Length: 460
Image 1 (tube, rainbow, N blue to C red):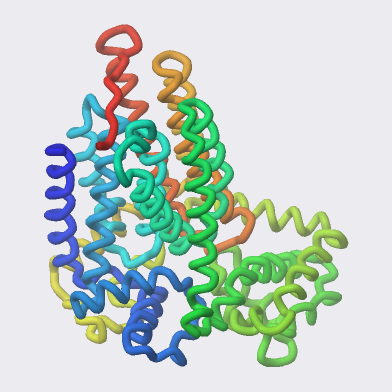
Image 2: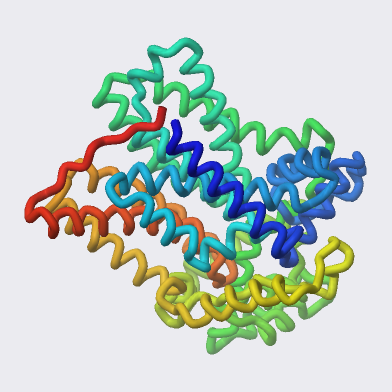
C-alpha cells in the first residue's frame, strides 16, 4: 500500500509540473476539435456536435471541464493516470529493480512528452495496461472471496473497456489476445466467473459507445465516413500506379464536390498522409447514404481485377506503417497549431517552447523507436531468450503483453491511417514494459549465474 502511495505521489508531482509547463497541453488539429465538442456538450449545443471524432473521450473531457472550467484538467488527469498505471505495471514485472526502471521510464522524453499530449492514445494505453494488470497479476481467487469484490471488478472492467475501445476504436483487434488470456487463466485457477464478467462488460461497453450518442440525440454525421477513408486513400494510390489508370478516373467521383474529383485526388495523393486525399474526396460524403458500401465494393473490385497493383500498393502501405521503407513521421506534436494559442489560454513562454523543441528533436533523432518492425523484433527476441534460459511462466505473461501490442498495431495495416509515430505509441508503451522485465531477468541471471526466481507480487 505504501509503495502504491509513493507511485501516486510521484505521478501527481510529475503531472502537475508537466501540465503547468505546457498548460493546457500540447494540442494538434483533433485536439481543437475535441475541445469544441466538449464545450458544445457542456452547453447542450447538440447541433454543433457533427464531427469526425469518436464520442467517448468528450464525455470524460466534459466532466473535467465542468469540475475545473478548463481544458487543462483533462490533460492533468490523463498524465496522472498514465504515469501511475505505468509505474504499477513496471513494479509488477520488475520487482527487483523497480525504482531504477520507473525512473528511466519517467525521464524518457517520449513518455514525458506524450503524457501531456491531448491525443487519445494516452487514455487507451492507460486503460489497456490496467486491464492487462488485472488479468495477469491480480489474485482472482482472493478477489472473489472479498465482499463486493466481483462487483468492483465488473465496474472497473466495464470502465476500462469503455476507455480502450472508446478512445481508440481500432483497439477491437486486441480482443482475441485478451479473450485467450482470460480463458487460459480461468481454466488454470477455475475462475470461470472472469470469462462471464469480461464478456458482459465488453458487450456493455460497445453498446454504450454505439448507442449513447443516439440516445442523447447527438449527430456525428462526419464521423461515419472516417472508417472508409483509409480504403479510399489506398484506392487512389492504386489508380495512380496503374498503367491504364484512365479507366478508373471517375470511380470515386461520388465522394467529391465536383466532376473529376478522382483525377484531382490522384494528382495530390502520396503515401505519407491520408490528408492528401481529403481535399477533393470528402470524409463527410463517404458516410452519406450507401456510399460506405460503394467504397467497399470498389475496393474489392480492384482486388479482383487489378490484383497485381492492389498488392503492390498494399505492400507499400504495410512497409510504410511498419517503418521498413522509412521511419514513422514525427508530426502533429504542434506548438501553436493554426495560430490558435490564445483561444485556449496557452502562454508563449520560453519554458513551453523549450519543452516542445526538446521533445521533437529527441524523437527526430531517435529513428529506432519510429521503426515498429525493429522494435517488435528486438522485444520478441528478448522474450524468447527469457523463456529459454530464465523464467518460462513469466515469459508467457510477457508474450500476452507482446501480442496485445502486435494485434493492436495490426489494425493499422488493415485500415490504413497516416504514417505517424503517435499511432505506434500504444504498442511502444506495452513493449517497453516487456523490455524492462526482460532486462531485469537477464541482470539477475548474470549476477547469480542461475535463473532468478523473483518473488511474485500482487496488487492488493
